[in-house]
Image (cartoon, rainbow, N blue to C red; front, side, top):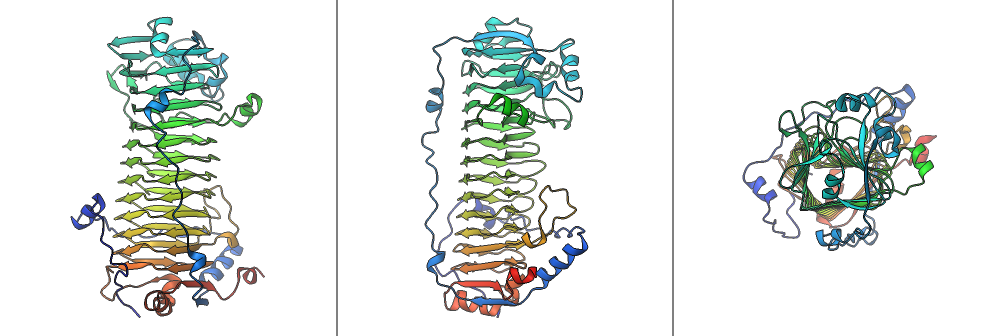
Length: 535
């Protein structure tokens, strides 16, 4: 039973950039072959084969009420402003500035420890490496320039400063870089970078990696080449507003570009410093190794920024960060991987009203046991693989996202259960509108070892529209369960009309009869329970 399904709601499509791209003929609909399943152990092969060959499913119509859900409540962004950031620090107590040996400072040990790391700064400073230290109160960048020798920090033109040493804000220190600083250039040749253990406020300014030999930005040339960077440690509070940063970061731990990180475990235990936090708002980041990275960070706000043409990732919160707000950002042109990705137990966070497009891989990714997150009202389009991807990350809600003209799937869900997809719009993607599948990860380079029985996928899809996706609207391989209700399907690319793939294709007539003709909810679940398969 193949039929074209009309829109039951009679909706009109909003006039947006997405619509212009679609109707202007700028769709990217290239089909890309799916990757081969990696080799697995013989035992795993048997179990996965059993799961994949299970084609005996119940098709029933449950009550609609349990599927009902109110719109997610999203954080209020009105308080995250330049004016609020400017009130975050106490300027009443003057701080101290000194020049000290790098190896004497805990906040710099990451860069002078094993693997002969200190050689980098010995070579650049041509001697035992020093750093500018700020402590015991408030200083502005102008205060620092007055108190250190000019060969370490100087004003080369009105409002433009060049730093030729690393700068460390200790836990008792406060550094402000404001609109009096048109630009702070961190010298690539001299090995300059900025680290904070205390409070750092940067507003209405620029912070750039700078090549003095080329008299221009320290633009990316190769991953291993040192470029200046910004890092804040455990216990720090950081506010960046209305600022531009460029040409920062390289492929070295904690040196990625703009990084917010707890200390390494041993140091964190000794110092007993809380998780770092802060805001980055209404700013612009380009040509960074990572536009943003965080590790074990709490309640950080990334709002209203532009991340363009960064190298590996645009926005990349990592291990055990939680309570994050990633909202109203524009992320595009990421050269190697994803626009926005949260990975390794990044929980209870909000990703909403962002635009992520033209990135080398996916627009938005939830990865490696990142749970309890809300992804809502994002525009995800023209990315070079999937629009939104979930890898091994259950218990997440996707609501009201528009996922258009991505080269592979609109929304892809792998090895993830209890994924709720409500009111999402997936149109003109190169493969499926929504694709759910299981994959055994034995012998892969991922650090999550899934038991074959844990390689499960379950989805609830309610409302929304799936239109003109090249391979079809939906494909779910060997699901633990799928629930569908009130899903509109439009503009099939096949002349035969709407055509499901996977388990849904095997039961298409029953599903469409319940879903479309009777306007009921549909539950698809295996006749054999997972507990029976285990025996």
